[in-house]
Image 1 (cartoon, rainbow, N blue to C red):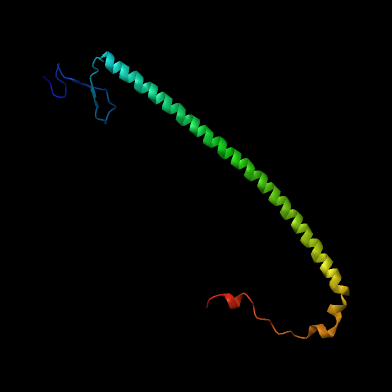
Image 2 (spheres, rainbow, N blue to C red):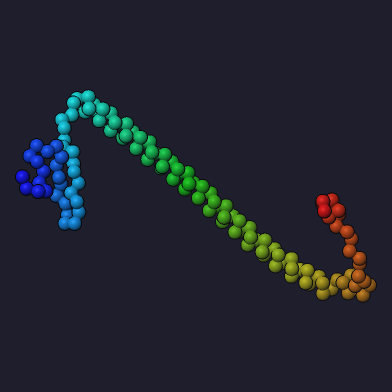
Length: 129
């Protein structure tokens, strides 16, 4: 026999490999018994059911995330509107305060600018040091 060729009665078959790659041995196909066929069918059916269950679970998870996304988008929109309203209210109240300060007799009285000693913070006395 020449080198590199398998023996005529060899159990392994060699596949044709691209240059530079080693051919991988492949086991020769054996005949399957009816029990093996039944087991294979049961295994495929079980795998098919498991795959369906997995896809359904994945779809349910995606649906739940989409619903959560929509709720968060609505909440975000409402909060942005509230921020806008509060910003407008702040502008309005700031303007009203500026106008009031121009004519407030209490602010115009020189006696109101007498420094008042600071009062102790009631919360600070309760905190541990």
